Amino acid sequence: MTVCRDCCCGSRVKHPAVDHAAQVDRLRELLPAAHRVRTSLCLDVCAQSNVMVVQPARTARRQGARPVWFGLVLDDAIVTDIADWVRAGGPGVAGLPATLALSVIPAPAAAGER
Ligand code: FES
Image (cartoon, helix red, strand yellow):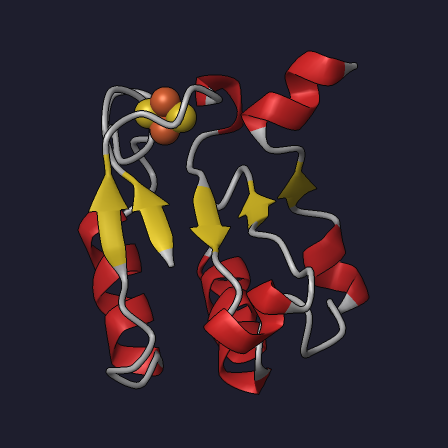
């Protein structure tokens, strides 16, 4: 999965109450090594910071699953819910819990198509 960390996501100025490094550490702690957690530069949806993107497993992608984007990930409970969903299989494999669905945002390309 990809954790955006740039001008807004991960910014203590924008989100002073969030321990951004701890979010990444927690994801790496909760997810097995097969689920690589990497950080990225700005993903162009800063209004939704902190943004995280879960990519589907290779098999699921071949069957049509697409990355799922999450916005306003500012709470430890959401981080844990995302990790639980990834461990359960993620996009195309595990159903998205209703509480987590509230944090889904359109990918920037999809937003531009509206
Ligand atoms: S810094 Fe994350 S979307 Fe811009």
